[in-house]
Image (cartoon, rainbow over all chains, first blue to last red):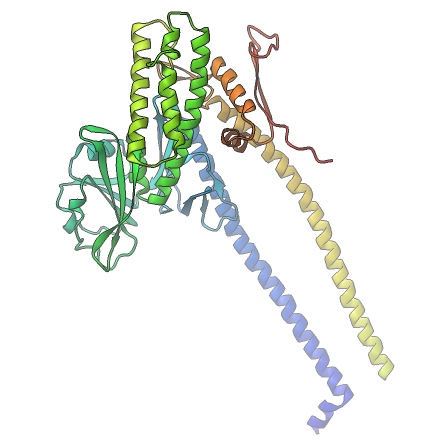
Length: 353
Length: 138
């Protein structure tokens, strides 16, 4: 009987009403659920966006100031991308902060409660740009041996960084302290041994090998980037790039990432080329307008500043990331520095920079 | 009976339709309100960017003056001002210009000396560092 009554028109209408109420209820309920979800996710996103802006403001302040160091509490994950465009963002932030024309050396991912930021001015020999280094206490920097380049970087590291020095040859038995990254800084590839305490780890151990361009000259040379491959128990080479001055050397060590270092290195080279052109024009002006006995220092002779600046510009414009090119840049910088020192100490003519 | 059911159905549809219209009107009003608030925010952001750029310019190595390698606080080298202005404004279309365009966008940056000289003579106490008004929409 019931079956029959359900099949008639009245029964069908009642069923339809209930169905309508059910569908309507589900739609209304799901609307509110999605609203709550969106608002929760939106709040997280907004907090992350604000954090991104905070870090960006902090980095901008660091870029505007000279040689500074800061340690700040920051309990979020920061991701850096440096390629054709340079940007970083915190967590799920919807808009990254761009740093296309600034050099910020950092690992690709930073995830800890404290952030360490250091700024150093790059002089070539005139001030070219500030270099910013960002790292945290959960990245361990282990300096192997006491070669001059290793000591040079060790002394330039930010104060609050987790770092230590170990004798050459003791890398194989180095203990695993469960840091996010353990970075070995060496002067020789022969010390890159299989590690006995890092089995089962992935993307944790890295090595940076620093080699001077020529014997006893530590102002330019090569940096090789390695990462530890656990299955084969060996260090795998990611690539080798040149450096110029201890500031860039520090950038290679802090970032311990070939992509980030290369990207920032290109920015530095572009900056050298731009500023060389500017100073060249200044020298033309000084060559025409300075007192006659001073003019030879700026333009007109083979040993004048304009020639060194022209060399600097030419080698920088080559955009060639090779140690030979960097040697030429270093040579032009040294000549310019000597000439400027001579002008300051031996003459009363305006200095070059 | 059939007509009554039809009436009820029409009534229900009408109610749903009205609710929908009210929701749509609500959304439109809300989005208009948001638009105004976003425009205000944009204005604020632009002002902040201008202040930031001004602050940054004063510490540019291209413009700063230094004594024995030490940068002087808020000091601009007049020769650098002249040279940089020439370089930027005469190299339109080159990579160098693009570099500064990316930093300074569509703007006009002038530096005026107000004391002791204040004659607004270009190259003496008035320098046009960058001039790119951009395109005006017709």
